[in-house]
Structure formats: C-alpha cells, structure tokens
Length: 126
Image (cartoon, rainbow, N blue to C red; front, side, top):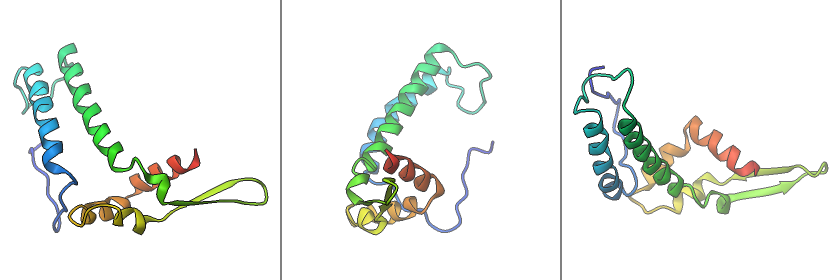
C-alpha cells in the first residue's frame, strides 16, 4: 500500500533486463492509460480495456519467464525404476551455468525458490 518494496541485502538483476523493460514498459503504460491514470488507488472493477491491457502485460511476463526455463529438460537425468516409473533429477548447477556470467546470480537465487522447485517437478513429470 506504500508503493514500495523492502529487500534485505542485494537482489541480483533479472537476466536480459533491458529487453524485458523495453517489452513491458509500453504494456505497463497501456495498463495505466486503461485504468484512467489511477495507478495509486486500487480499482474495484477494472474496465474491459484495463483487463485486456493487464492480460497483455501478464502474457509478456509469462513469455519472459518461460524463455528463461525453456530448455530445462536438457539439464535433467531421467531414470526408469523397476515399476516402469520415470524419476527425473534436475542438475541445477549445470542449468545455472548455462546462463551468461552476469545472469547467473539471479538464476542461482531463482532456482533455490520453492516456486521454481514446484515448476521444475511439474515440467519433468511430463
């Protein structure tokens, strides 16, 4: 509600941050415009235009995140046990090392989150 985020310690920069900003900035502006410029106050019922703009923003964000993890399977080892069940293990260090040196701090921190573990488990089940 104070329009701020507090971090303890430093937060590594997102990979390809300039590209992401270039994509999201006009989409964010479209959301603000569709909301009538009221970015400081919550809106109980957004307009159809605001919903459409927000959806476009979220689609771009989702595409960015999917691009970060698109080759996750390439860094997994899969074994088939005696009951013909597949068990996959993600080689996180190898996955993180596949990114540029400047992107690795973020990816290392990202790969340690519960959200990433759940996502990776789901992706490796298929």
